[in-house]
Length: 552
Image 1: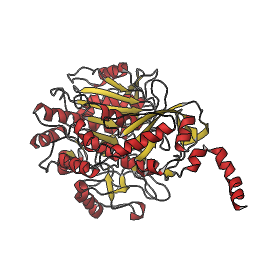
Image 2: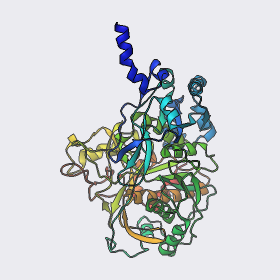
Image 3: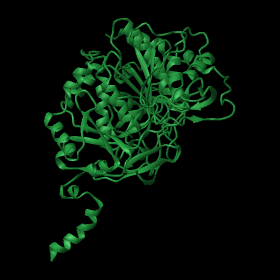
Image 4: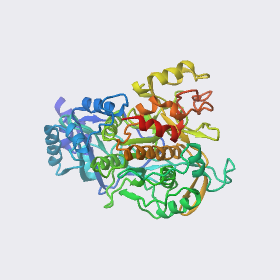
């Protein structure tokens, strides 16, 4: 009788899921995932909708990869600047053959075929309908809509894999992680600080000691910005911005190369135009690229756009890959699962060991506040990228919207340990330590102006644009000029910047006034030296140029 009772109890499960998935034990993947507040479920996904599933296969020799990453990035190391080729990186961390065999066998059992999405197969791409994906992953996909935009995303709130497959896979996407959405703040009406249209770029060049300096001496030096979720770029807008803003700078409006599946569209995005206009305003003369990923491929398969960007970086040769990427996207640390964040950190290391610099806007939520705790941001808080905070005014001071603080997931890093310790022991008017993790990785690392930017989008000049999405491309343009100086002298690119930044903090403009917002009495104050709003400060190109030329 007991066995019959159990059979009847199992009937609802058998009706709800494919019977094979029930008979086989499953491991829940990314169990800590949740739907971010801004995304709302609006209904079941269409069964015939197409997905491009990406399986992140576990890699090998990761300790060795991290050791090399730190050695080639530290100016005090004998191995500084000895970057690895893309081919060597992928050889080093290639998945085990048995891991790939297990995954491909699992896919074949579901009548699906996986193809290498990266040179070594550490990402495997699978085209599947929602119906097929639900059976494959024991999942239920829904359509979600972003409350502040018109963006929609097909995601599941949980998924699982057989134990032998779960053992060889870090995660699958798109599943529980939601795509990056970032919109710069626009203060309408008259420009807040009384600036005239077109003054912004010239003032930034003066403020950061760039003057009329133009890059382009070094062959193969490229910088790029990323855009996600249909943030389109229009070349005509950049040309109009150039006419309005660049004054005496002897450089033509650049011909921007466009990479990815989301570069074109009827309407330009203010975010996309902000990024491409200001990385070029500061990094004038350097080859420029816009990498756009819409979350949907040209044949309409939905994918995970942030991961797609990293995949394309892996597939781009050393001769063609940009040496600087600026990304204006940041969200609360826990909106990305630890599994996805840990693997993304490895992808960041893969770029760094190749000599590629990754800069991320720190975010526009101040120190953040949730459940009476500050909320650190991702990806700017990753130990393997450079976070860019924000300033305002002249003389510069920290701006309240700029995100910054201390990570809960990653400890303070060796290259910043002394600077963070000094801040925590000597800064005045610190918030109560109950709000933050004083042993965490401190971010941002540097900063730049983040208010009152003029942006041309759809041929309309828009003043009053603000956010650290202004700061990241601005700082990135200056770093691109530094790469140009080094490469033209036969030296290597700067790669992962943070060890250099903290060892040369006196080459930045120290910001000691202002603070960001937060819980209760507010967030963190700016202070002498490093602080978790402006980092070590804003770039001084002339001082930094001298510093990078001293490096081997």
